[in-house]
Image (tube, rainbow, N blue to C red; front, side, top):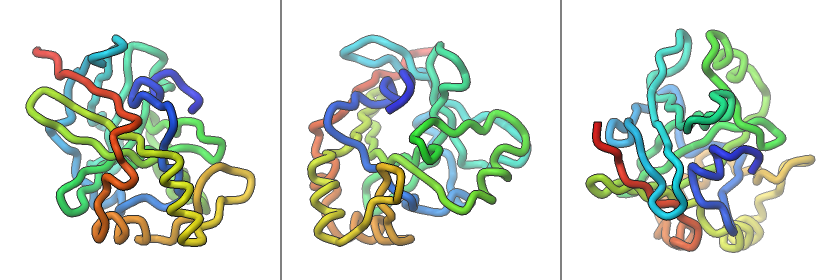
Length: 191
């Protein structure tokens, strides 16, 4: 992971789910209103502000998470619900850098790119508590190996077929991948 805010978004230790296909269509995504607001990391300090900036041309479900750091280190993502679980599809560049959509036209340029890269996280909200699970790298690697999913040349991202991982998560317990071994916990700050 390249940036401090991505590390603050979740406590990376031994995982993440790096893929070339998201779990759903960004154009159909709706923002999760329960995510919007200011959050404090409970065990390591650090704040996380989650907003839905209005940028002409961006889809309505595109969400931004950032701290008090450089705005160019914000995490842009959208959410997907599969069965009873909710996931964040974090948009990245081929090198694993954060893709930024603060400027009009950036989303349109990104849509024209022939390949896409994402980190997937599972998150849960319980009252004023947010838990973000990055998944187990070991489990993801085994799953992809068993399914014969290749790693995209020159990257660390799995070339998941469109819809494949969403179907897998719908039919299987997501706790197999998102096992709680790599989580960040936040508490929502009062206004």
